[in-house]
Length: 492
View 1 (spheres, rainbow, N blue to C red):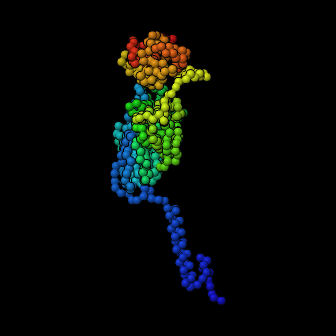
View 2 (cartoon, helix red, strand yellow; view 1 turned 90 degrees about the vertical axis):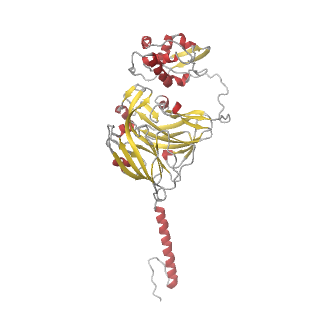
View 3 (cartoon, one colour; view 1 turned 135 degrees about the vertical axis):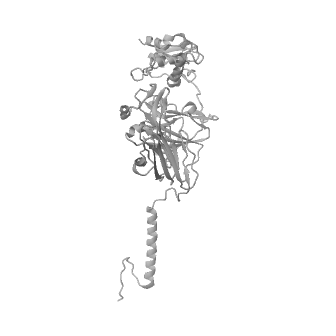
């Protein structure tokens, strides 16, 4: 009987056959090990070595830096200066904001997947507070916050690898963190995927956030941060790009029919979730949570958590002014989360016809709208005619124009005109009563009949006097001023 050994690999045999089998097994094991190693090893971020050195392009909202076209990672320098500056939060309302780059939100930062980023954070010598930065795109202690605590008049430098593509929030993380964020310290950083994003005609930067002020909503003058309201998340203002009206009228986003739009949308918080929506549009593609790839199509409203982001893309097919809102709707129409996208170009009746007929509809009921009770805003007791016209124009734009329209033309069978209005000009005392107390029932204006509700508005005496003075001397009307004393007398 031959003396045969059973090897550890379990292969029996002698001579050349055994050798061939062992060789085959060895090759198989080596190949399997290589495959296993390939499965476990992560792909190199950004693919390829870091080549070259460049400065990042930073932009103020709503502008976005141009797409990065290079096909390799680079060493990129980002320089960001912190400034504490006074800005307009709403018409007549000032606020001392703390900013990354002098604006709220902070500068938009765009780098490429795989880039090595050298981050320089400077705190302006005139500032009062130390600050730092937490970039959600950074893998490391505090997202960079631990390495970037910076006193006024100093600069900090740290580096990070842009490993994870996507759209990320950055914010200050100096204690008390909530106060620093609430005062305006947030922005977006895009780590562009190595393969890039699909080409579009327009890219815009939109960021929602809230402000908590000692004064109530629209109380004029310099306002300061209210910690008690912030803890309760009882925001006075919810806005896009740092202020009421930052994306409205002559500051609106623009596009033309047939073009494509990409919005990089962030939510700085510090407390509220955004229900981002564009009235009259549908998002063709959505990168939920700011992810690198689109994961949803034909979406109406996108939830964006505090400290989160989303990328939405859509084509525009019909000319109109489309309204950007937080669809927690009182935030839009009462607290400021409202912007505009103005689209120009030819109409297409196959897409939208406009009103084709008008029929009688009997509503089931109506109710007078009343804003919450509160102490009257402290306002001056005397105003010049010029001051009243200026203040009145602001009140009209904020409160009245949505119904009576920007030029006072009203809406037929819905809201009566103020332009060349016989009803308005006939009785000053009646006009004061309607604005201060509201009115329900039929009226006739310029021969046209209206039967509806005028809500009572919680306006101070100076604002009522000013807005009535304004409309009585605008839109083809000509009359004497309404004084603060006259308003006070009608309230008694």
